[in-house]
Image (cartoon, rainbow over all chains, first blue to last red; front, side):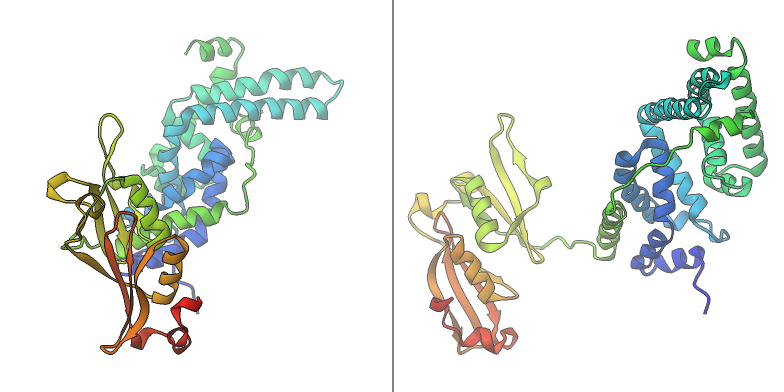
Length: 188
Length: 182
């Protein structure tokens, strides 16, 4: 016996709202980890129920041709995160400090240690300096390992637009990380 | 290092409390319930006047299990609580100030003009709760020939409440006990 697809479950939940609980059971842990990477445990824990409440209330708009609801849930999450930009930036800077300390410990007494201490905070600043759409595409790709197709579903964009947005994010990052790029980051 | 690989280095997992997912699910299920059973607005809402609304709300919850709907409070500009609403089962009761709209509390007026009849699921348990909270019992818990088990209580300001349950719903063990021995 095959278990019903997300699309079938959501379709059923239009008449039997309780069925939507299964969507939570399937995906909440993944979505909670996604939110946690972005804004930390405390805020993520407060957002997870809200995210699924919004999904439940919008379930009529779920495109039934999609098999998995996960990209759609990522998309709702991405929108919710826009209200938490400051917390997200704070966490990213902390992550950069920790990554730099980690690298420094790995390469003790090597020339790379100094580089890492300078490099990672700059990466954080560069990510923060990206336009919202590019930053979202970059993080869904680099942190969540979403495919182009899933990103397109999450961001509700044509797949070609997702590709070009991600390429722009790459180019921007490269530019911001070049010598002298730091100044451009700071001045934004 | 490529930009995406650099970004990946900043990916960091958060440490969640074990109950985080349960709390989230509770939020979702509450939303589902709200849709599945849209709350019906009762057609008739008795309005009961009190000299001390806050004390009344506290008593009605402790003694009778009436829960205030926090979002339904009316508070004046200087912070005086003017009106509140409590819910019980599928009903609402308004709790207002004595003297407003001609409604008089027995504590001020010295007379009762009416009583409110409430159906409960477990009248014996309800009686014990009311007694424990200091409700004055006006008529003891007992069975009636018309097939109901009831008691009457007076609240802090002397409003009279009647609580009852059909005898066919009362478990035999509950019915045989004398209320005085609870």
